[in-house]
Structures are given as C-alpha cells and as structure tokens.
Length: 239
Length: 334
Image (cartoon, rainbow over all chains, first blue to last red; front, side):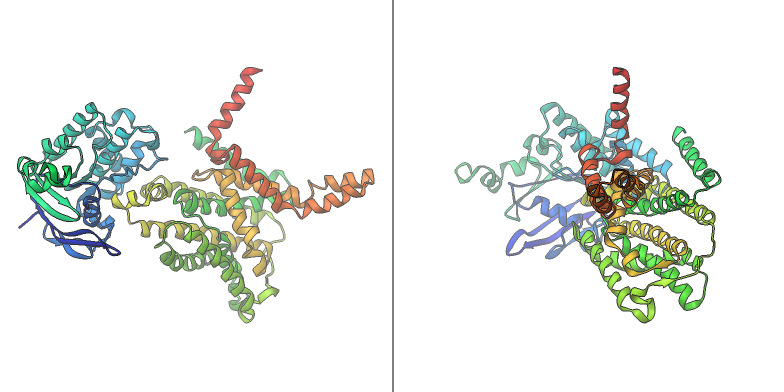
C-alpha cells in the first residue's frame, strides 16, 4: 500500500476550482517534487494535506489513514510537518524559542524540549543565530527557521513550500544540501519549488499541475521533456 | 538569581508594610493595589501572552464578586468561601463563552467580551429577586482592621503571579505566545490553538473571579454598576496591563501600583492639594478646578495611556532596558 496518497482531490473557492482532481502517490523515503505555474493549485494542495482547507471532494491518505478531515494540529502530531511559502516566524520570540515551541509537540518537559530544539537547530545550521529574535532574521534565515521548526516537530513526512525562493546562489546550494540531509535522515519530502535548478537536481519524481489538474508525472528528465509542461511554462510556441 | 532576589525583597517589603504603616488610608490603597496585581496579571496572561485581548474583565470580576455575595445572602455561607468558588464561577462563565468565540479570529473575541460585560451587568440589574438589582448586596465585614484583608490580598497577589510565572515558563506559555505571534504557524507546530486559548482564558478568568470575591469581602458592598463597571474594572485592567508592560510577568505589578496611584491622585484632587490652594488663595477658579479634577480620573487615564504608548510602547517593564539606558546616559553626561 502507498505510504502517502492524494486521491482525486478537488477544492472549490466559490465557483473557482483551485484544485480539480489531483491524484498522486508518494513512497517512503523519496523526494517528491510538485511543480506548476503560479496559481496552478500547489499551495492549495498543501493546505488540504495539512488541514488548513477541507477538500471539496477527494481523499488524503497517510499510512492508510484518511486525514483530510483532521484539524491541522492533529495532522502535525501524526508526523506531517510543513513550512509556509509566506514565512510565518513567531516574530517576537527568539529563534531558539520558536524551535522549542515546535519541539513541545512531542514532549511536555522543558528540558527535553530544549534538547530536541538544540538538536534541530544544529542539524539545520542555525546555531549562530540561536538567540536572535525571529523577526530580525533575513529572508534566508527565516526560510531556514521554517524548516528547523518543522523538523523539531519530528516529522515523518515533510512538506516544503518554496523554501528556496528568494535565496542567493550560495544559499541555494546550502538549501539543497539541507533538504538532501533531511531525506537521508529518514524523512520523506514533498517539495513545491519554482526554481528549476533545485527541483530538477533533488527530486526523485516530479508531479506537474496546471489549472488544478495533473499534466505530467515522472522522473525530472521525463517531466522536463513533456510537451504539456513546456507549454504550461513557456507557451504554445515552444511546445 | 538576581531577579529572584528582587522578587523576594519586594515580597518582604510588602509583608512588613502593615506593621510599619498604621494609617488605614494607605493600607486601603495597598489592598487595592494588590487586588489590581491579581486582575492585571490575569488580564496579561490572556491578552499579553496569548494575544486575545479582553475588553470585559469586569464580567469575570463581577461573577466572582456576586458568587461570594450571593453565597452569603442566599445560603448564609461565609463570603470567604467565595474566594474559592468565585474563581470557579468566573471560569464557568468564561469557558463556554470562549468555546464559542475562539473559533473566530481577529477582533471578535475582544468585542464579544465587551458584550459579555454588558450582558452580565444588565442581568445582575434586572434579576432583582436573585441579586438585589440596583440595591446591590451588603454583607457584614468579617474584620474591622484592614490588616487581615491586606494579608489575604498579598497572598492572592503572590499566588496569582507565581502561578502565571510558572505557566508561562513551561509548555503552555510557549504555546500561548506562539498563538499570539501567528495562529497558522502555531497550528502547524501541533498546537491545538482552540484548547490553549481556552486554557489561558480559564486561568485568567479564575484569578479575576477570585479578585472579585476578595473585593466583595473587603468592601462589604457591591452593586452591578460597581463590579460590572466598564471603565472602573474592564478598562482599568487593560491600563494596568499596558502601562506595566504587556507580556511580562512583573509588568502588571508595576502597572497596578502606578494606576492605583494615578486614580487616587485624581480622586483626591492631588491629595487635597488643589482644594487647599483654593482655600489659601481664596481663588474660585482653583476651587472649580479641584472639583473638576476629582471627576476627571478617566481623562487622566487617557492621557497616561497616550504618553505610555508614545514613549514606552512595551510598557514600563517591557521597555526597562530602554529606560535604564537613557537614565544611565544622563548619569555619564553629568
């Protein structure tokens, strides 16, 4: 059985179908890329997986369990972590406190939460800014804080929403390294990304959507050569 | 360590206060101050830490006060039992209310608390058979001396601050602040935001209710206009929180001290100074001013809040480093 599965997912906002029948499966331990032009329904899909939106129809199955009707915090407890495309640092808390708050999802004692948070901070390379207020971090730091916080909740499956957007080339390489390191530590990853260099290098498989519907799925090479994908990104002239 | 020492020192000074100061007037003011420490700390937990601003603390304060008063008038039980029961009555009022309102975000909770305040005030006024309506509730005070009340108030202030200090430095505290900073992010970190908002409201309502019960016992008289008062209780609670420092453990204590002082300054026309000047100089204008000032304490509050928000947006405790820095600089300049 599939480790994680999204089945005929549909989401209407009023009369607009933001996501219209997307189906994909993710197997344990892979990096699964989700791509598509702006407004194609990627983040809406993430929001349905993590419980911020209820699907109009369709199912989300995680370890053979239906999760699309669970509240967000329950989904987190089941082991699905997520980051936000529009970063949401807990501004007036230090980086350390941000991560401690996340670590409390798996324990109740202060000491234990501190240790877990320290581990996550070290793992994600934020040690140098540990005591800085989250709102004073630059964008690269904030994106990394999103990942660190999600990792501190001890996820089995991690949803990364454009964590590489707005980074400079050096930071990009670091981000790629970090994502690989997270996968190697045993966490399955679904990643939304616009930067083709990132998504093509790290994904095992890619699922492309446009106007809320699936247009292609396969290895990065297969998807890159797909006629519909090129059309969606570059227009009919190039297809 | 240094912080603990300061806290112990303050506690020691407060413990010896009634032994040194025999004047009942100042003892009375200190009892009010301690009561406001309880209310301010409670308001600060729900509004300062959890970010759910309450405009209607009087709803919980009045519930506690009436619980104590009604116990005494209807069941002939000592109103002191109200200290325990009043807290739980306030929780019983607050939780169902929070259960409904916390589903919405934004200003709804704040507006709804304002409404709850008014609803309870009218209910207490209309239900004459049960509450005595506008006549209020009068009970015989247990003690003539103010000292026992003082120590009860001191104990409540200390316990409320301790309990809140303990809560905000543990898991719930981290969760409260996370909810204040970003509710969506909090949810994604596995925080049951609805539950933790209720928890925060529950603790806050409990202590506010206890303070209300203390008020009933101490003053011996309550009526709906006094304990469900919007500007004397609800707004005052907000001011204590803001002036002292939102989201700080010791802020409400500083805020309570300042606000009780300011309130008294205005109420007494700067301790009778204006009236005295009016008599000495024989000036009618000063006499009129003295009377106007006595009724203008709300205006004084307003001015104080404007000044605090402009100069010290994080309150006196929250901006303490800033204050110390500017004072320190002045010293080096001299």
